[in-house]
Image (cartoon, rainbow, N blue to C red; front, side, top):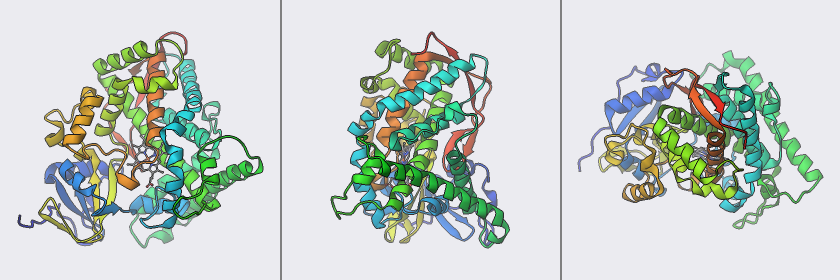
Length: 462
Ligand code: HEM
């Protein structure tokens, strides 16, 4: 096949298409371009040259780890100011990534995650209690409460630390510091170069926030060192673990980098997933009824146990379908390891930055058919999901790919299934505003913006 140029929107000299990008929700602009240009496009943004792949066929090629690798740039590069070469932000080849990855893999495996069930259950119960107390008329700020849930759960399960977000109106200082740190990392990445002089106050605050994050994690580590425990969690795995390949142990700095990393990588993603799942359920009463019926059939009114997690295929299907339509990490940054050709006709140079635009590729009609834009959980039931994954490898990538894919996936899944079950078991939900239209709030991840619902107790709390 002949090589053809990659189509691109026309932009200004120097600035390129920068001014065309919606500054609040860049993803909407990317999606518009993808609708216009098709399976692949080139974007020149203030001197940067970025290729975006928008179809499953090309995403599948990009998942070949021999040819392509994760690219740490933009906001991720800024997040390194706080957590350095922690797992999420490590650049390929950095030795601390390998050590932490090998030491932590077993700690994130199914058995360890099942061991965290009771603590996940405890935090989920606190959320249920809070919503029960609200009564049926109070609008619930869905994403905020799921963010508290995800953070409290991660801190408790990973290092036995309690933020107790549901007992205070004010968030723990760590939580504010982390929120502000992430927002500032994001805006630093979007700021034009050579303007740092104008941001001294923001820079000082940024350093202070990083200090709060690291001091909190350091205190947790020190107190564990002071009184050894039988407890097996992610912190103990990192303190005791020896890398089978190099014989190395994690340094204190690397432990702190990764403790903070789990909270960063795990809280917005999980909270976004749960928020979008309820958004979708409320819009799809049939799916809602089927999900609630499944919980009633499998659990009844008694307590949810770890054995129930694998017995609710329809709830799993809902979560998968939600992540297909609303991937909370909508774009993954990669780069070419060598000069290469995509799709047999698009040349890319070694080091070329290439984005996987999951939010578009997941809607590919070649894989998902004419109703690709619709929420249809049935297509994600195990049998259909597995058959499609065989026919179209890499057609569903919300957890990333290969070695650099999500290490927290079993953790997130167990938590999300549990929370869906518990909430459907205890409440009937309705939108606060029946005319709510989905808007995105985009930070490092996507969430539904200003989405409120109301919760009516079905009976007692289980
Ligand atoms: C990596 C998605 C929950 C920890 C990733 C990546 C994605 C992802 C797409 C790859 C990023 C890239 O290639 O740049 C999600 C989603 C979640 C979720 C959608 C929830 C629904 C979690 C949780 C944790 C976690 C709960 C921690 C307990 C990590 C870490 C990495 C990662 C440490 C980096 C792995 C590496 O490069 O070695 N996640 N994640 N994630 N995730 Fe998750």
